[in-house]
Amino acid sequence: MKRLSWAILPALLTGCVVGPNYGGPPGVASGERSGSTFRRADQAVTSPQLPIARWWEGMGDPQLTTLVDRALASNPDVAIAEARIRKARASLREQRANQLPTVSASGTAIVADLPAGSLALPTQGEQSDRIRAEFYNAGLDASWEIDLFGARRRAAEGAQAQAQAAEANKADAQVRLSAEVAQNYVTLRELQQRLILARRSAQLQQRSLALLQQREQRGASSRDEVVRLKTELTRTEAGLLPLEGQIATTLDQLAMLTGDEPGAHDALLSAPAPIPMIPGTVAIGDPAAMLRRRPDIRAAERQLAASNAQIGVNVARQFPSVSIMGIIGLGGPNIADVVDPDSVAGLLLPRISWSFLDFGRNRARVEQARADRDEAEAQYRKAVLGALSDAETSLTRFGNQRRNLFSSVASRNGARQSATYAGQRYAQGAIPLTTSIDAERAALAADQSVLEATGELDRAFIALQKAMGLGWSQQ
Image (tube, rainbow, N blue to C red; front, side, top):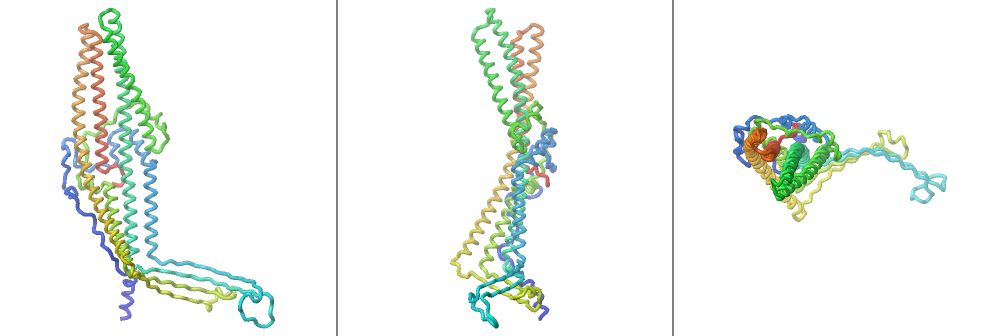
């Protein structure tokens, strides 16, 4: 029987764990099941293969890769997320330490030189007008609140979930950051190419205006035509300034994203460069893998786990708490008494407390925790449904932009062919120079449409990678 009592002592000390055990997140959609497919995926341009985390490297632009890497290393939002991770991990260590006893040491030395009669102490022998009193003490005291009903274990469980949620939030910040850097980089290159085309268009209009003014002087053209062309030229030249302003703004936005001062990338990126090309086929995997990969869903699931653990913390408060305090001290009127084993004194104080009459306060706290858990569950369901919708919408937009680009390229090819024919006919003297210039301007407008369609396709591709939850390293 004695052996049995010793065997059950650890179980009695650790007690039970009240509150609901976390059984994982609820099922939300059919897309969570393995083998499901995206409904809006175009089999001609997407692949069910597992996508790569560093998707921007597939665009084949070293400057883009450099910018994204710098942003992931230096962006303030990532630094904020990392600080929150350290804070959450420190909170977890604190909650785990709360399950263990607290031990402290103390030392005391009292030396008093008092006037006689100031203390009601008996005197012996020759009396003096001064009294000297000394006392020395060294001791250890320990306290331990036994986690009978698992409040501290539930608190540690919740703290661990919060730390994991902080890690997921950092990954989500990296996903958003890599996409935002790429979006701004594509916009920069598109604006630079549009500015080149706008300047070429202005040059052609100036040539047309010069020819039209010569015809007006010969009486072969009206003043109205000259005024109309001047107005068009003024409008084209005025459009250059907003483009230049947008380029400067985008450069500053990229500098901010990479954690640099405005203008830091002007020397590197001011020279125009082509818009990056996306891969011919995009790997997207399946919805189940996407949901497991997306860090915002992971964060929502960990918040749900933390809310579930908090219920157990509040339920445990409804039961009695048991704590033990022990004190060991050595001391006496002489300093040698501090190391004298005969002067050892000990004290053991077990304590039980129970707020059995709190007029429903604990019950209200439990109901609040359950409501928080229900809210976290609804937030998780919202995150899953939002992720599926985001992915399907991005796939639809990506497919539409590809078709739009193909249409724009076909129109551009036709306009460019017409401009080539017009140049040949002008060389043969079959048409005037103004007609050839007009055909060239129409081809430039078609080039502008292709540029815009290319930029929109790139941005749709980037939005798709973001929807897939890509951009953080631990895949």
